[in-house]
Image (cartoon, helix red, strand yellow):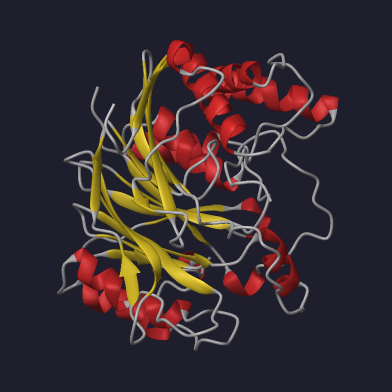
Length: 386
C-alpha cells in the first residue's frame, strides 16, 4: 500500500471499517478530490470491497426495484456479463443483502452525504477532455427546470472521481475512471490494450425524462464502458459485444470511442429506430465531440452552433485540425472549456490512453486560478499490471 492508493485483496482486506485514504489528486478544499483503489481477488471479492468502500464513504443505499425487472436484470447479467453479476453478488453481501434482492445496485455513489466532451484517436493514443457541470445534483435539477441554482451545501456531483484498477483472478484486468460511482466508467484501458471513452451524443436532443423508470435489464450508459473493458480485447470483439448488448439511456444518450493496440478505432452510435453505426476513418485522426457523427459525415458541411450545442461543431473542426499537426494533449487543450466566471461547467480532466503501453495518463482540474486560468494536478499515469 502506498500513501496514495489502497490495494485490497478480497474481503480479508475489506473490513467493516476502512482506513482513511490520502487523495490521489486534489483535496476536499479543491474542486476535485480523486481516490485510487486497486482491487484484487475474485469478482465477488472485488464487488464486496467496492460495496464496503461505498458504504463507508456515503449514505447511499440500494433503492428498491420492481421484482420482475430485478430478476430480468440479474438473468441478463448472468448470461451476458457474468463478471458484473459476480461483483454485484459481492456488493450485495457488503450491504447484508442476498444477491437476488429486489433492489438496484446501479449508480452506487461515494459522494459524501449531505457534459460535453471531446475525444480523438490518433491511431496510437486515445485522448479525451471530460467536460461537465460543476453543480450538485439539486442545482443541476434547478437549471434543467429553468430556475436559478442555489448553493444547498452539497458537493458537486462530479467532484469525487474514482480511479479503479481491478485485477480479477479470472478475467481481464483494467484501469478506469468514474465520475462518482463504482459500477461504470467514463473511460479506461484494459490489459489487452482496449481503450474506451464515452461522450454525450446529442446535446440538442438532450432533455430530462418525464418519468424516470429506473435501471432496466441491460446496460446503462456508463456501464457500457465497463462492460467492454471486462469482456473485450479487440475492436472486432467490441463491435460484436455492442451489437449483442441490450442498452438503455437512463440519462442523456451517449456515443463511445473505442480503439485497440492494433491501431484500429471507431465511434459507436445509436440512431433513430435503434440503428447502430460504427464510424471509422481510413486515415488521419478520428475525432468526436457531442453530436452524432453519422448524421454529419462531412466536416466541411457541419451546421453552425447554437446556444444549445455548446460549440460541439466548432470543437470538432478545431480538434480535427489540431490533431493533424499537434500532440494529442495540445490538441485537447485547444478545445478545453474556457474559464468564464459563473459558467457552470469546466474541463474536469484530460486523459490520454495508450493501448500499447496499457496506460491512462490524466490531469485533473482542481479549481479556477488567477487571470482566467485553471489549476490542475500534475499528469498522473496509471497502468494495468498484475
